[in-house]
Amino acid sequence: MGGPEKLARRKAAGLLNARERLARLCDPGTYVESGLFATSTSNPADRDTTPCDAKIAGFGKVNGRETAILSNDFTVMGASSGSTNGRKIAHLKRVATQRGLPMVFLGESSGARMPDHMGSRGMGSLLGNDATQYQRMRETPWTSATLGLCYGSSTWYSVMADFNVMRKGAVLAVSSSLLASLAVKEQVDPQEMGGWRLHAEITGFADQVVDSDEEAIDAIKIFLSYLPAHHREAPPVAAVPSGSGEAMGDILGLLPDSRTKVYDARNVIRTIVDRDSFFELKARFGKVGVTGLARLDGRTVGIIANNPQSKGGAMDSDACDKLTSFIVLCDSFNIPLVLFVDTPGFVIGTEAERRRAPGKIMNLMNALALTTVPKISVILRKSYGQAYLNMGGGRNSDEVAAWPTAEVSFMDPVFAVRVVDGLDPGAPGYEEALEGMDRASAVWDLASVYAAQSVIRPQQTRDYLIRMLEVHRLRLSNGVGQHLMRAWPTSY
Amino acid sequence: MATLEVKSEVTGSVWKIAARPGQVLAAGTTIMILESMKMEIPVILEDGGTLSALHVAEGESVTEGQIIATLTE
Image (cartoon, rainbow over all chains, first blue to last red; front, side, top):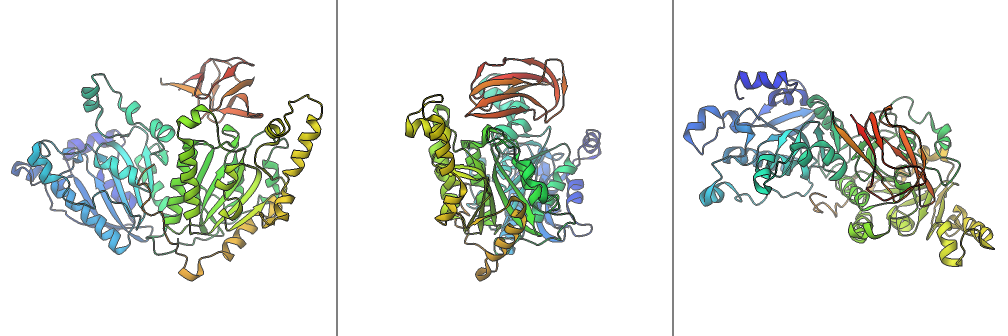
C-alpha cells in the first residue's frame, strides 16, 4: 500500500484501508491474491511506488462461497486506472463469469491515471483494447461499495452493479469536482455533485446508504446471501428464524379503516416475510414503489409493493424505473417475485409526461411480461387502470390473490362518477352513483370471472404465498429461469 | 450545520400542520398532512433535525417539488 503516513491518516479519519476491507469481507484464511507483484509499467520510475498497481485483486470466500474481489487502494496513486490494473480487473471478471463467482468491487479511485492516458498514444494504448470491459450480461451477481472518491472506473462499476452501497461522505461521479469546476467555470461542491443524498434520493444509484466502511461491507455480505453464485442455479435456502409470521394475526390492523388514509406498506411486508429478512433497496428513491429482497420459509423472494404512504400509492416515473431494474435483477438470478398491490394508478399530469411516464410504464410492463421466474400478486386494497396490469393483474402474474378489502376498476370511483356519470359531489344522484361504483369495484366480481384465483383472509397471506411459491417452483429447470432481460439496460 | 429542504411529493393542498418552527424532530416524524387525489398524505421526515421554517399554511395549495419546510441538521 501507499506507506505508513497515508495509512495512518486514513485510520485517523475512521476509514479502513484496502486490505482491512478485504479482511472484513472474506472468511478468515480464504483470501488468495492475484497480482501481488504487479506494478505500473507505463513509467519505469513508478515501479517501486505502485504496489499491486493500486488495485488489489483476488479471490476469497464470503460466507463460505467463492467470490472475486477488487479492492481499490487509494493510497497508491489514488487507485487510478492503468494498463496493469486494467488487466487485473479483466482477469477477475473473466474468472468470475466463466467459473460462476459473484463479483465485489470495493470502490475508491480517482479515475484514469495521468499523464499515462494523455495524448492519442496514451488513449490508443490504454483504452478500448478490451471489448468486454463494460459488457454486462448478468451471468453472476455484481456488487459494489462506494467508499470514497469514486470517479471513472469505480463509478462505472458502481452503477453497473446489481447492488451498490454508499458510505456517507463518499462521492460517486463521472469525474472530479475539480475537473467539473474547471469545465463549468464555477465551484462545484463534491457532495452536491455526487454525494449520498443525490444518489439515494435523485439518481437511485445508491441502493443503500451507511455510515461506515464496515457497514458497507456487511451490507454486501447480506445482499449476496440472498443470491445464487451465478445465473444457472437457484438462490440458497436459509433457516427460518423463530417467530416468523407470528404477527400475522394482527396484520389487518396495519390497514387504516378509511380508504382516504394511507399506511406504510413496508410494515405489511415485514409482518409477512421471515423475521428480519426484508432487505430494502433504494428506500429513498421512487418511494411510492417499494423493492427489496426477503425470505419466505427460508427461500429468497423479491418483494415489490406500492406504498400508499408516498403519493397515496400513485406510481411515478422513478418508481417505474426502480421496479423495472429490480425485476431485471430478480429474473436474472432466479428469484421469484411477490407483488403487493395498493395503487390508485399512475401519476398523471404535465410533470409526469415531462418525466417520460408512458415509456417508463411500458418498460415496467414489458419487464413483467418477460419475467420467467414465478410471480404472485396480492391485491390489498386499490388496483386501478393500467397500474392493475403493471402490478401483475390478470395473466401478468402466475397467481392473483386478493384480500376482501381489494377494489379493482378502471379508475377510482370518486373520479369515475364525474367522468362516467357527469356528476359532481353534491349533485342529485351523486351518492347513489358512487355507491354503485364502489359495489362494482369489490373483489367478488373479479373472483367470479377468475381474474383473481383466490380471495384470502389477510391473516392467511404468509401461508398462501409459501404454498403458492411451492406450487410454482421451476421444477423443469431446477429453479432456473430464462433470463430474457439479462442484457437489459446496464443502469437505470 | 446542514440545511435540509423538505419538498412536497404531490400537488394538492395543506390539510393539517403537525409541527412548529423551533421543534427538534426525529426522522420519521409527520410534520404535516397534505390532501391530494382525495387522500390524506403525510409529509414524513427522512432525517431528523430542528424545524427552522414552515413555508406553507393550512389550506394553501402546494405543487409537486415545492419546498414546504426547512430543517437544520
